[in-house]
Image (cartoon, rainbow, N blue to C red; front, side, top):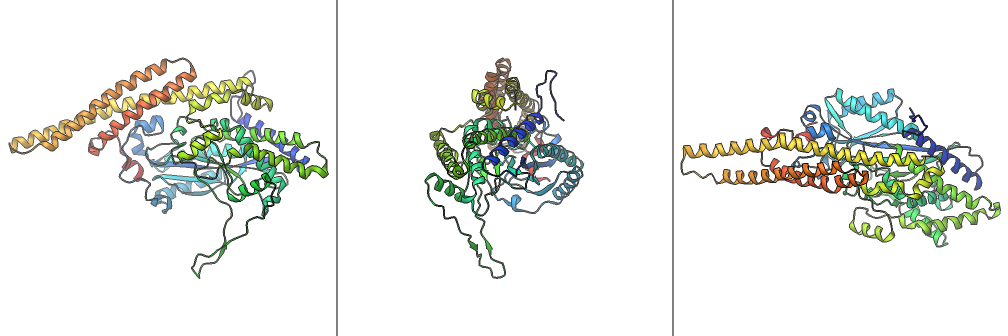
Length: 555
């Protein structure tokens, strides 16, 4: 379904997505004709969105106000065991999870959604589903349906499917990888390098167009994945950093370097793997490679945009990607359209060479999680938009308004309205989280602390009544520690309530979002430290909610 206002503005994501697909189709087809591939009449973009999620027991979920209202736990001490053994990731599916996945596949297939891959993910209780690639607008619709069906099937199994980007502190959150490519109506994947990528002119010119697009529009690509939930993942050593860079792998990097330096690329030879066991066959080593710390990685015949959060629609990233690439392809076509056929090869070589020189700063094949890379990215002049309020002002930058209005993806009014809506949504989410945390701690957790203090004090009195000279030092120490934490929690609560009220009263949308990000979120983090410390001292039977131990290891 597409939605528009009475005056004709697009209110949805479907309409701009279709506009962006048409734009890329037109520009890519035109460039292919100019470089000699005149058989192509149509270019489609394809997407395969991998979907990560958590499964928790429904009865336990109902006892957590933070999960019910916010989709993530706002308090909670870590379990004794997390993901450090990687046994969940490499282990077999548990029967209850396997049954859920089987039923999910069946329900998705009924809807024509080609779900294919399913497996455990790194964190305990975390899993992943991946579909077969499809045309972008169909893939986006399928992913929206997939998220709904996942929740409904989970309910039938006495489970809850959590799609928040960071449901649990201290273990990995959930992302959604957007595997993107371009295919012609003649059945050719334009981003397939073939066996000799150095000689594949069509591939190279579109590859460099994508690199240029990512470099010039990194800010809006970052914005396309920005949300309050995803801010907890990006840059946290479990998801790509907030800096957008392109991973190409060794072979393609060398190919581009040879073009830049006007050198002959000899190519890499196939290497046969011999793993030393005679009963196992030899096989050729895969010469592609992957970098799981890269936000935008080339993975064989497609680009994997890895910054998306699990709850997000994949429409926004693809609107941005399609439009940015279309603009760069258009620029290439303008430079090549009047070149004679006998000069075309040299002109393309020079165009690719210049593009590499101008935009190689965005190429990075190393570890994106290191502080050294963040420093290097700053030196290269790359954006490092760490949070949603940091990123969103770039949405209304002149160059971005010009891009989207030029190709009629958005009108200026549609751009400005989205900017305000996204800021408002961010602030509302944090306001709900703050209010939920206050209620959980004030009404449920602090009474548990005081109840346990009373219980320990009663134990000490009872001991003294039986044996007058018995030591109650351990009880006294525990009461003192809990009392200090209770005072910290009470102070933290008052600070959080006051700062939330100030943020709520801030009228400017950007200043409002910044107040929630810099002050309210910080207050919540500080309050959580005291609550989590107290939780570790209180028996589970006296806690008002199920702990991480039960939530993560009960399914």
